[in-house]
Length: 225
Image (cartoon, rainbow, N blue to C red):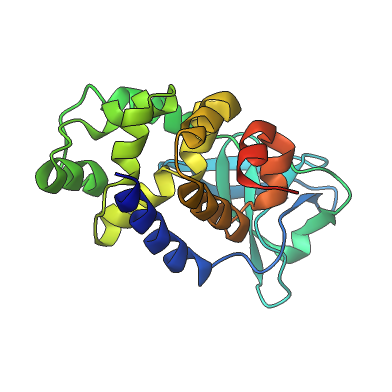
């Protein structure tokens, strides 16, 4: 089983390393006295609109002079883009914790719903990998079930389904499971498996310092600083 898990994570890391964030994330607020209304989406899908008030803090995903608009993440769980001239960076403030509550609610709701063909991850998992209820397995993994976690990590799916599952088993699952559960899941895996998870978290937003701040037990398992 671990050989399959290692192969799956190696493929994920290669895909994401080429598009990793070029600079560290940072906290920020709106520049100026007026608020800003942003159209975006929640972490696990779903369009949403939010008005950011002056003084309200949010996370910048990447600081780049080459981009006109910067990706931002609000405490409400909504992400979107804001013109960089409306953003004041706060480099000395510690990163806030991302909000993945929408993922937890979505997973629990979908585990009791019929699978639709438009749900590429769950549909592919069922049709090609024998996973009858993808979201049930996902909820079980988020509650600390090691067998469910291994099953998710061993799914080698192509295209949108593969990319979707690869995303879910990293940052969303970490947040929904919480530090205690996720650390226990990783503790049961091989050193090679944990090394690949460590590399993935180091090279993709919001990166290694974020885990050290918000998930200390997981950090201790993955890194030897």
